[in-house]
Length: 457
Image (cartoon, rainbow, N blue to C red; front, side, top):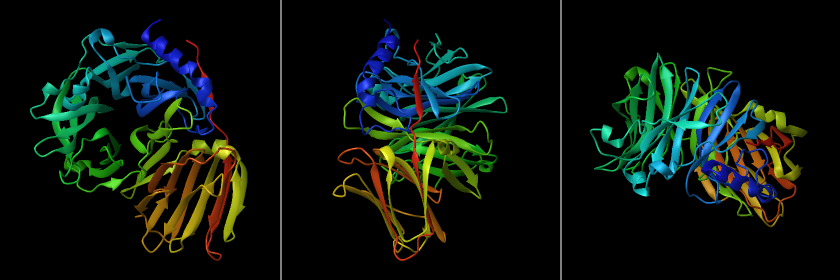
């Protein structure tokens, strides 16, 4: 049995216990069992979405990194395929860190950071490349790996990793994350290539203020709309983004915004929406496991990104509406209802100057509260608090509850992802309190789970 077969078998052996954990999400995608972190290699190929991810197939904790793999034609019905990448032990590889997948004239091609020792994490790994046939199942590493080394730079870069690649005008572009020194500050670096195998370093694309961004920048994404772009970084803190004007060449970004205010959301990756050129689709890693030590980590629901009037709009993918059933509509001052099996969706609309509280609980003695304070423009999500910047006359709060996972969208301009652990998991109650008759509307749906299939080799 080879390493991939052994890893796949380990994951499937633990699946039965993992799927019966009552805290395990039902409509968020996650591996059959064990650990996952960063989404990797997102690609729409031959009419199917392929999502890869950082994966430890042997424990529900971080460890030796493989690449897990799932595919779907509609973002609702998923097939979990055999593990795509295992460390190439013969060449000294111990971890297959994050990267991307592109279509190279019909050839699916993965570029990723190869780590041979934990010292490589600090001083920078190598960029390796692998290709596959049209089924994206078996992956063959290039015999000339590595295709990039940290020594290609004329400056000192630490924590150099996580390639993100796209093509325009017959030229391949790449951004990579890392950290500059003296003083320490996070940065993103730019490269070009004509063939994906030979890369030229073009310089620093963006660097942080050493008083603010001291830590490395991980998992950069550069999303383009004509002459404007959005740069997304994971700075070992809350995910952030900046707006970039590409008419000014590839210059530094100075103003940063929080992409998701929750501490449990990290390392997102985006691809161009295959059915709408004006949008991108993005998935992030939601941290944390459940009651049983058989799984840890899941994908966020897919988010659609648009740049409208130089503002980033973030909405849940319309595919989620396929999961809706048992709709309830409220227009009075308060509402109490149950979400069957702890899975549901809420859309709340109120005036901007009205406070409200949403209590989520299975047992009233153990509540998770979402509170809005208009005077301070602040939201409280459980024990986390953040200031709300999207001031409009009306607030739309769109919430997804999936047993132990909560994702919230504020006016589709700011997001908040968190975890919620009730004492037990059956139906979850929702108590929405708005004073007087200020509630404009509240719509609630129960949500079914996504469909998971497991391919045999």
